[in-house]
Amino acid sequence: MNTRPSKDLQTFANPASDRDYEITFDCPEFTCLCPLTGQPDFARFEIHYVPHEFCLELKSLKLYLWSYRDVGAFHEAVTNSILDDLVAACRPRMCEVVGDWFVRGGITTRVRATHIDPAWDGATAGD
Picture 1 (cartoon, rainbow, N blue to C red):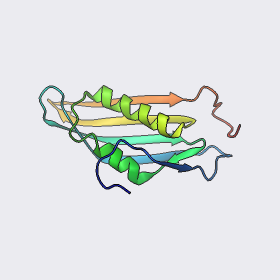
Picture 2 (picture 1 turned 30 degrees about the vertical axis):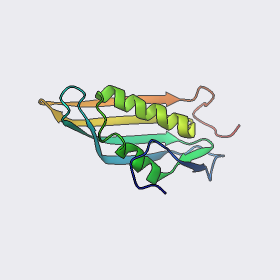
Picture 3 (picture 1 turned 180 degrees about the horizontal axis):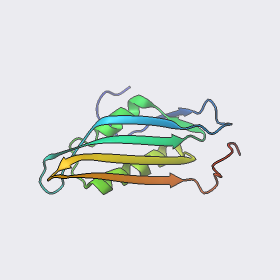
Picture 4 (picture 1 turned 135 degrees about the horizontal axis):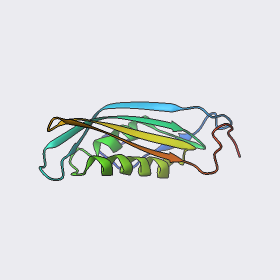
């Protein structure tokens, strides 16, 4: 597998697709660039999702997050882009991405973006 930054999110078959369960990733070392100053912005991301047919593969997630290191983007754009890419890759029943952005100019920012599959009732799994 690649060990360079990559936007290619890999998945694998959900081993328990007949039940709802939540997977949580804690990503404390996220870095991108401020689009106005070019200075680094740091964040801790939490990703919570209820898989459907596929689960996210961890190394590809690490390389995906690493791909933002030299990208200039606002906090809101980055958080929503991550959510969109995760949903496109694994089509979860539910996914929430929370970006806790470190202090910049005396202000911290928390951005929460959520996706819920309209076909999911939140109580049962399977088709």
